Length: 174
Image 1: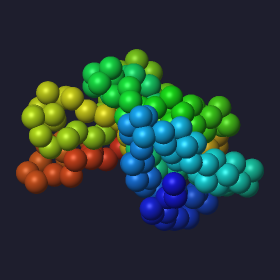
Image 2: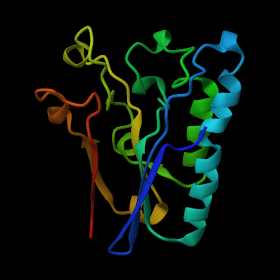
Image 3: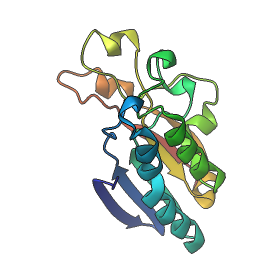
Image 4: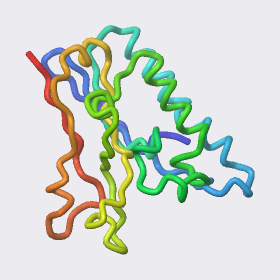
């Protein structure tokens, strides 16, 4: 699986890279493709992320990763066990990014809180807070050391004719 979008911005000596991964079309293991899709989802990102860390440039990896790393990141996790966004292979690939030195900004500051960035449009998902956290801000060590706040702007999702995603934000010290 390839990234569908990657944009790069450099500002004040910091690199901000935004990506969107499409949802793997392999969410049913009986089709025999779930493991391959899970491995492929992050293969290119891992290579790119490693080169960014090696460069030493302060970097934020931002975007719709289409992965729910933990059970806290999904309403009713038992309903998502066979979905590509919650497959063990995909969750492990995300954990590897963290182990390699990236910091999950929202989870770091809110380790035990259910926080969502996405709600389907039907059956009152937003009103019931039946969401998913699939949008992430991953910080290189030099950015993570400046992290002082992180969250999700739920108000945007509650507006008239909103996106099904809400923006994730961070606050950094100078």
